[in-house]
Length: 352
Ligand SMILES: *Cc1c(COP(=O)(O)O)cnc(C)c1O
Image 1 (cartoon, rainbow, N blue to C red):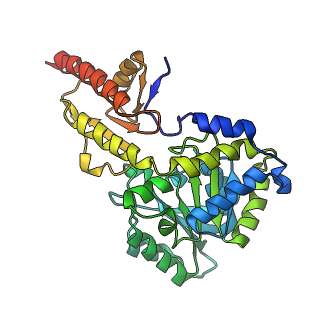
Image 2: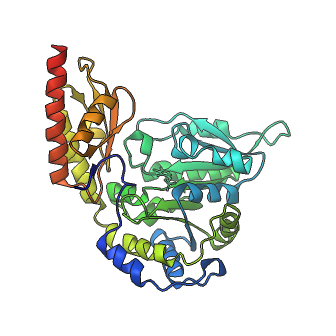
């Protein structure tokens, strides 16, 4: 039996329609700009987010890094959330490869930096200082329960950036989840930023790939950076074909994942020994915690669930992350809740 995997939406397999599209994809050499399927995917992506152009890249990390190295250079500084994916989970690429230093700021319960703190973080034009060049945003905000970040905040940050001559980039790995939760089209979410990257390989189920979108001039330079990073792929149409299915067939169903996440959160809340803030579950990510009286640790519980072929993420000794996606629906959720309830009953018995 295939495993039931709630660890992330990156674990999604390609759908049967994707496998079929990959099999029959027209291809060419994309470094020469001659892969018709890649070109089609890029045009479709640009159209969907309302930007002039798009670039197919190997991963979300590569998309963000190519964006940063396009907007900024050595000695420049990028302001971002201290729990942003780019700051925490992308191996320090901006500094390691670009000489761009991050300026991390705290974020609130839904991933917003304080506007006054952003403004205060922008440096004087002085030879002592790094040059403030870029503000990095994220939507949905992974570290804050996948919270959708509201449009008025994005508009306010972009206003600050414009007044100070800084660029803005949005890490929209789960852009379409954010748009679905906000009830607006993706183009509305990105209207205020100069560039955006989003993943095909998460909830949209493609096996590989992200898109980086912006003005034609931005994407021309990002294409050069992608080549520097070793991301110039050749007959990438076999991958882009799956991405086209992602954008045409998988976007509109994301709200189902959100409903399933809410269902899961409500179920978790009813299990004794588990604490979860149901109100904070707005997209497809659920964090939950063990109450102090539970003797088992989160890794122990996750290991027991694996024996029932159910995989969840133990994020620390006391908390978990679960993510809903195309391959885990109400049936799988019921299996998880049932198995977890049984484990918790034993955990509580041990502590009694
Ligand atoms: C997954 C993710 C990325 C990176 O995507 P990869 O394809 O795994 O490199 C970037 N930002 C956020 C918010 C993500 O969730």
